[in-house]
Image (cartoon, rainbow, N blue to C red):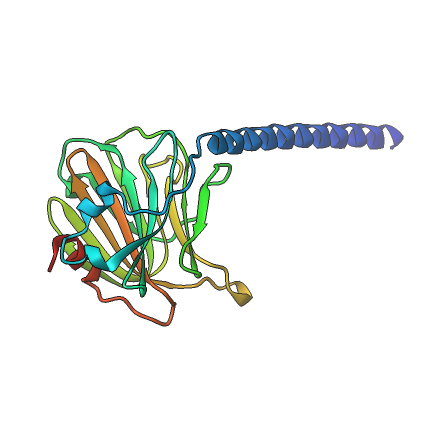
Amino acid sequence: MKNVRIVALIILGICIIYFLISLGIKMSDMFKSVNEATMNDLPLTQTITSENSSLISKKYISRVRSHENINSKIRSPVSFLYVDNRYHLVIYKIDSVANMTLPALLQTKVEGVERTDGETYTIIDFNGFSRFEWRPVRSRVVSKIYFTLAGDSLNNVVANDSIISYNLLCKNFSIRYTGQGPIEVFMVGEDRPLGSIAISPSDILFLKRGSAVYLMVMTPAGTKSRIPPDLLYNIVVGI
């Protein structure tokens, strides 16, 4: 009986040592990833870039002002803007995509997801009730965009070769570049009491221009407000 206890204690000790080593390796990799991401950061700017201006029609550009651009050495800026001081607008550029139409690039699925564990994300609480998150990694050529979204009252506003737009009460959405790869972009409502999550009225629009795809997300200033289902589309095309 004594020998059995000794063997059990040895096995338990080995398991604890293995767990601590694995945890240490995981924490080391995480700190390394965070450090690399920080080293690639550039100072914030607060102007509407010429590229962003080209995405917004002349009819609406005077109603848009910059909040901040999150700049990086290894990828295009992620921009946060205001429209009429009533709406928040996020512009995220997918720099290089395959030479095909937007419907061929974008694979959409209605489902809720969780952010990928073990990955480093830049996180911006941009409207007081939602977080916009992305992996701060080097841009690369993308042949598919796997897009998931979850929420209520989903409406596909428009779908053509260069624009696909959705309107919904959004719980979360995600973008992957491979079917089983890490989530690259994630937006989710802030945590609320009793385990609930804030719902974000949202226009979500994908715009293909040349070899790039722009993700544009518009939300109102508060969760009790609503956003017209075609507002972001109108801002882009000038209706």
